[in-house]
Amino acid sequence: MPLSFSQLSTYKRCPRRYEFAFVKKIPRQISAGESFGASVHNTLKKWGELEEQTSMPSTLVKDQLRLFVEEKSETDQSALSLEHLFHLWHSSFIVEGYATRVEADIARKRGEELMRQFFDWWSREPRTVLAIEKGFKQEILVAEKRVTISGRFDRVEHVGDAVRVIDYKTTSPRTQDEVDADLQLSIYALAAAEAFGRPCTELILLFIGEDEIVERRTTRNASQLKDAVTQIGFLAERIEEGDYHPTPSVPKCTHCPYRTICDASAV
Ligand code: SF4
Image 1 (cartoon, rainbow, N blue to C red):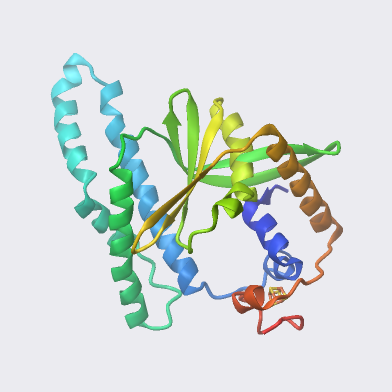
Image 2 (cartoon, rainbow, N blue to C red):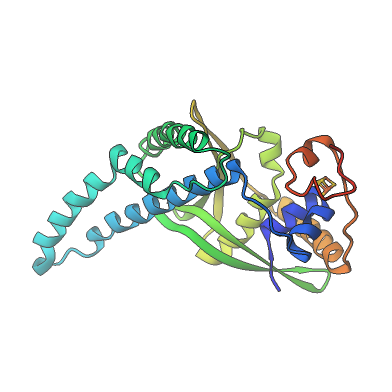
């Protein structure tokens, strides 16, 4: 069975939390933050698909289609507007996860500001989309053992002969050091090179906030990728052994959805 990045990261945070979520499969309520993040991802997925559609006509120009293509191109250009992004946001907004209707309405309004920030970022340079919400399975060989990691690219763009992977975040921005050591980005670097047959020269975590958008860029060299493979192998082995020893701490347990049933909780 492939391991998803979400499973690895949950295990890394707290093995007991992994046990609750993926072994015992204890149902839990989606939080407001998770709901908001899912709404943003759904919206930007639709936006990316629109971008892919608008780039199609240039590859389809044929005499007999020229008139149709020109009309479609005009329509599509207007689809890539801030107004249309707002429309996508409102039609993608998930109301589950909020304590009250008022809280959901505040989040919905806040989302408009995030969309404005995203649109401003997106408009800064011409972009060629290669993939949107594309799933992958990456096989990794660790000490003669094969581990398959599954994941999903939010957005992949062409940059010259290479690719750039962009992952959307709605959390507070992380520091550059944290991004440079981020395991998820290492997995993306490994998977992108194989999935697209081109080197992955840029990895970006895009922290979309209502007041600003923070773009943290990083890269991975061969030694960093080797470290990531070792780290994945270590986590996969402990998961296989069924080591679910809890690692409580106030920050981790405060945001853990299982804190009310966990006897090791620090809060
Ligand atoms: S409450 Fe704390 S110790 Fe328990 S599962 Fe959650 S993060 Fe781990």
